[in-house]
Structure formats: C-alpha cells, structure tokens
Length: 155
Image (cartoon, rainbow, N blue to C red; front, side, top):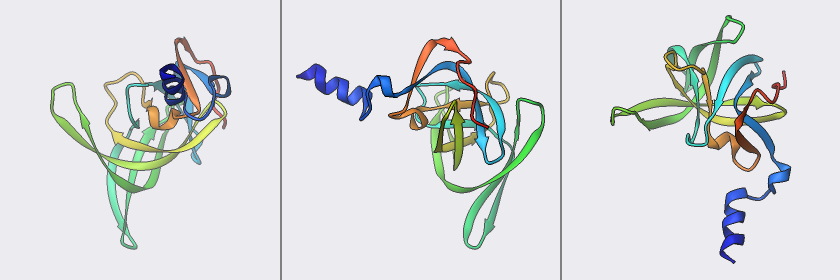
C-alpha cells in the first residue's frame, strides 16, 4: 500500500510512459520571441530562472511590467516585456537571500510548451542562461541525468 501511494505522489496523475524524457541540458525556446537558449534541467530548483539584463520596471494602467534583455544562443540580444506577477526569495550559497522578480513566460522544451513562472536574475557567471525548474516539469517531464540535447525545441 505505501509503495502505491509513493508511486502516485512521485509520478502525479500521468504514468512515466506518458511523460517526455529530457536530458539534464537541452535547448529551449521562449515564445513568442522564438528565442533559443541553452537550458539546464534542474529537479532541485522549484521555479525556472533566466539570465535577464538591463531590468527596468514599468508601471502602466496600474499594473507593473518588467522590460529586460536576454542574449540568445545565436548571439542576438532580445528585449522582452512581461507583467510582473510577484517576487521570489531565493537562498544563495553564501547563506543570504536574494529577491527576484517573477514573470510568466511560455517556454518550449521539445514539444512541451508551457506557461511557467520564471524569476529574473543575472546568470552571466553560470554556464546556462536558462534553468528549468520543477514548476515547468511537474506531471509532464522526466529528467535523465545521463543524457544531453535529446530534443529540439518547437520554434
């Protein structure tokens, strides 16, 4: 009985066979900009994180928007604007906490496209500009830690 409950919690509402298997590093696209980024798939991260530069907060019609730049895999810089949906407090290796603005972005990993919460931060010192967290993977994606670049993102 305990094994059945654990399996149901682990795999959610779909069986493992119904989920897309991806490697720990993949290419992903950001819609509607069709921006291609290298992404690290990280089951230890709750949310997705993107390398955002020149972050500017804009208030319009009583709502808060964020305009920021992202460097694509092709070397082009794309300006993106999304409505801010919150702030996330993220623990750092130093033991301190960093507050990061949250937006919703449509991300495609293989043929799996999903609107997901993304925090904006400077990832310039990290190898991958996009980190795919559990909120994107939930009930649809399994990460194979021994594989890389198994899927091309829908464009």
